Each structure stands twice: as structure tokens, then as C-alpha cells.
Amino acid sequence: MSVKFAFAVAALSAFGACGSVAWADTVEAKNVVLVHGAWADGSSWAEVIARLQAAGLHVTAVQNPLTTVEDSVEATRRIIAEQDGPTVLAGHSWGGTVVSEAGTDPKVSALVYIAARAPDAGEDFVALSGKFPTMPVRAGVQNHNGWTVIGEDAFLNYFANGVPHDKAEVLYAEQAPTQASLFSGKTTAAAWHSKPVFYAVAKQDLTISPDLERFLAKRMNADTIEVDGGHMIMVSHAEEVADLILKAAGRK
Image (cartoon, rainbow, N blue to C red):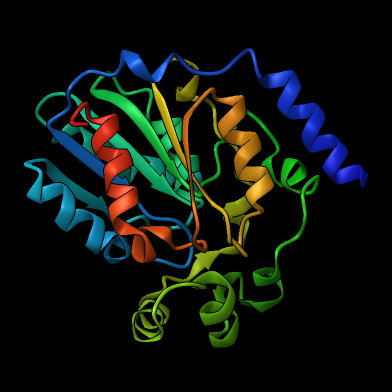
């Protein structure tokens, strides 16, 4: 058994008894706020948004600045402040960092993590991630004067694996440059300790280790699904992702 795998097994056991409140405690929400991650923008949620709107929910996608944790949380809090009533807050990838911090807002009724980070307050998430396998996309990250992007081959084959080629090319064209320092930023709160939590693990993820995703979901005591797709499952498996968000909103 490798050291990394042994750590994952031990960590899952250690955190099995703690985490968020039970998902059954969710209330019916009328709003959903979606937070995209690094190297993406709000349009990455397009297919999920259409499904949520068809179900009668009011949906807003945050245009995450991807500069600092503080900037991204502020942008999200501005959107939450505009919501009327209970609101589900969902994040993909690095957007889960924002969900963990901004999710403390009283309007937020449930949290949804889609193949996402889920740091504890003050946690060194880079160090935590280092205990799990390094994924192939890492080699394709390019740094241009402190701003990072993913090269085309790595984006199509690793970041958007499983997404139809034509859609993956569009996502590549829309990717938002991300400050390199963003990933080492720390949160000051972890809303998942006190809010119902839902998590979608991407089983074929080549950006974040699926084992890390499972660890995070277990640590939060999240209502968890496993989706047989890559990192961008809200594109390749929009129906399953939308269904999980609808469940968090008390609509399923």
C-alpha cells in the first residue's frame, strides 16, 4: 500500500464521524448561486443553469475574478445579497473554496461541491492535496507573469476530458486566466461544519484526484454521488449535476 493511499484510508476513517449537518435537514430553496473554478467562467454552468431554470429555480452564475480568495468571496457575497429567500450555493473545482467561506451567509441553505476543493478554516490546502496523487493537468499549466492558463492539449485531454470535442474547444477559448497565488490562499471559515452538504465526485477526474474528492466528501459527511466523468462534469453530465443541486434545494 502506497503512503498516499494509506493516508487517504486513514483520513477517511478519522473524519467519518464529523462534518456537516445531515442532508435531510435541507429546506426548500428558491435560488441557486453557482461559482466557477480556475481556468473557467460562468458560462461553464450553462447546461446546468438551463435545467435548474426549467425546474423553476432562480439561478445566478458568479463571474469569479480568480485573483484572490477575498476578491472571489466578495463577488459571491454580492450575488447572495441579491437573493430573495433560501439559496443553494454550489461551486466547481477551486470554486469550492469560495463556497466554504461565503456559505456562512444566513441566506445559504445548502452547499454543493462539484469535483471541488472544500478547505477547512485556515487549512493549507496545497499541503493536503500533496498527500494525494498529482494529476496530469498539472504539467500543462503555464505561468505568464504570475497569471496561469492551461495549454490547449492539456485542457482538452485532461481538464475537459469526457466533454465532446467541440464543446471542449469552446471552453478552452473561454478559460479565464487565474493568478498563480490563488491556490495557496486560505479561508477563514468553513460553512460545511454547519450547513447541509452535497458532493459530486468525478470518477475520471484528471485535474483533482478523485481520492481527494472522496476524502473531502467523507470529511464533510456530504450526501455524495459518483459521476463517471472527468473534471468538467457539469458540462459532460449536466443532468446528474443539476439533479444533485435540485436535491440540495429540496426539490427532489
